[in-house]
Image (tube, one colour):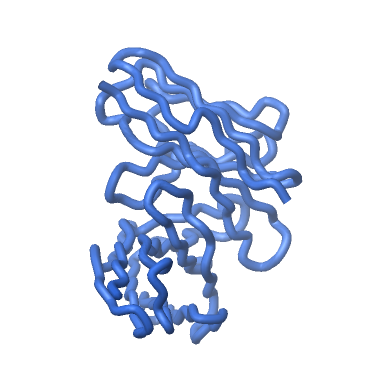
Length: 115
Length: 112
């Protein structure tokens, strides 16, 4: 079974520039998550989709961050304009409602450096 | 408020046993997860507890006490490859959200 795919793996941009990240979840997983992980911290949920609808975006800085999952499969996360404090790893995860634990499967992440 | 506490770093010896503790205070609770994260890699699922007690899976075991807001991850027969960060995460509520709140992680160094 293929895992969660993300691209690019690394990105370096200057502050005030824009950047977009892409995620393709595990086939059949209806729920998709975007997390931000700053160095030395645990992942923080930015947004959660159930199919193509937003379930939780309470911690998404909506003045600069946006995300979409138009067809309920892959998703993009955009930052416009970027700030220095956005330097982090952006993790995408997916889960299914089958089973008991509904554990989340994570992709390899995109490491963003804002200079 | 939401608060999950774990030690920042731990060191242990190859072949030994180590216990990583996690305490939590969250507005809701619907399960506790442990994830392993090697440097530069994605977190991988280790264990899940929703009822009190011990769950054993090979060399790894996880314990939960809901009344105390406490969990631990026990690693036996430590191997060098177990050097990683171990993340404790609480699922805040059930239903649609399945939202995980992560601690900052415990960086475990296994020494020869």
